[in-house]
Length: 223
Image (cartoon, rainbow, N blue to C red):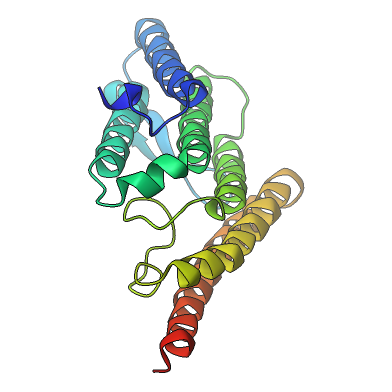
């Protein structure tokens, strides 16, 4: 079984299973407690619901996304040609997947709470959770060794361990800065500012990582 392999720490396995069970429990409770919809399933930059869905979508969509995402991620790392590197990156992989599981649980909990009528700014919770996830990813990217499943995977990082290491150091800092600023903005500023920070920060992080890895590789190979 993939969850029992060396790729994840026991704590990470516990978090993934526990988060999924908690999501199913929340969904089951909401399914019994809620009348037929529609219910808000998407929010705009001002935090107002701009799309409504059926009770089934509001209650079961995120657990389905969780199961699909984690299955694809675990299969991908299990089949990675550089599996040995992933086994040596177990701490990074465990924290990243564990954090993703907790973020999806938090988003699902906020969505269910909103459907049940609690006065909760669901969109702000979602953006803040994504910002926190970015910060965690950025902190642990530097601990991941070269692989095809997790990390900043450009043709140049995958071709050189040194380019991989240096790109992930810079990219990790950009991820962390974007995540921290987004989280603070989600707490302190209008929601639109937090969304703008996340969008712009993510775009800049991708551009920096892509360009920097290309430049490092050209310098290393003399191209």
